[in-house]
Amino acid sequence: MRLTLQLVLLAALIACDAPPPEAPPAPTPPPVVEEKAPVGPLSVGELAAAEPVALVPSPLEMQAALKRSGLLGPQGLLVKPRPLKAAGEDHDRLAVRTGVALADLLLIVQTAQTPELVGLLKEIRAGLVALGAKDDALSALDELTAQVQNEALTRDSLVQELDALSGGTLPELEAQLGPRAVPLIRAGSWLEGANLVSSSIIAGGNYDTATDLLRHPGVVAWFQRYVEETPAGRPDQEQLVPILRESLKSLATATAAERLGEAEVRQIHQSTAAVLDLL
Image 1 (cartoon, helix red, strand yellow):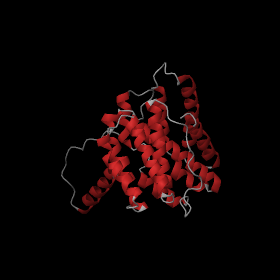
Image 2 (tube, rainbow, N blue to C red; image 1 turned 135 degrees about the vertical axis):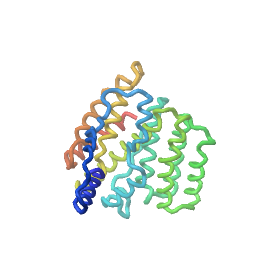
Image 3 (cartoon, one colour; image 1 turned 90 degrees about the vertical axis):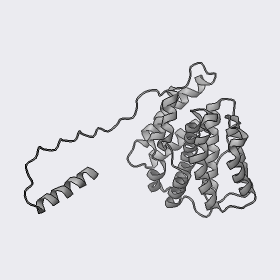
Image 4 (spheres, rainbow, N blue to C red; image 1 turned 45 degrees about the vertical axis):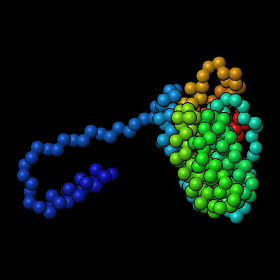
């Protein structure tokens, strides 16, 4: 677009002046080739490199989209977050579960009681510690928890702090958590958010908001490649991987639509629930 505009302006200037002196024609710029997404499994290094590509909306972006949709009314989200099973020792599951807690916190931040918010912040901290984060690296999270507990922050300010946590603190912890953890935390946030938001859309019957809130095929594609990277021989692989593959295949089909309607929203809700039930 910028190149086209420059050429149009150049042509207008030439038309207003005397004929230009003869000069060799400008070289034809090479055609722009759209870079295709990588196909097949990604290495751990490639998974880590994929993290900065904004796999999921930031907390501020999600809050803005939810407000535009009307799902965040005075009573908050129409569907309350649901508790999950106790976390096991597997770090990948712990990372996804930590992302689930982060999504729950974001989705109820405007309407929940203070103890509920503090509980989720502590759950996020426990997940990060279990993944390998050191206490001194969690000082910002501890300070945020204390401010929430003392009701020293407005809810809008808390959303901004969560945005800083997602965009700054989590990447800074990558050296302690390992290259897979931060992308999986964010993917877990998307899974939980998509599940709860799709529930609310179904309950309210307002499918016009679905495309803006739920159409993120890049997240699904990343998760599909992650599943292919699952090491062979893990005790939970026999149960986990086949269900993940089928659920993600269904999600890929739903999020590929240009506009999401009732059928796609129900498909997203069912598929994300199947993945979350494995945690």
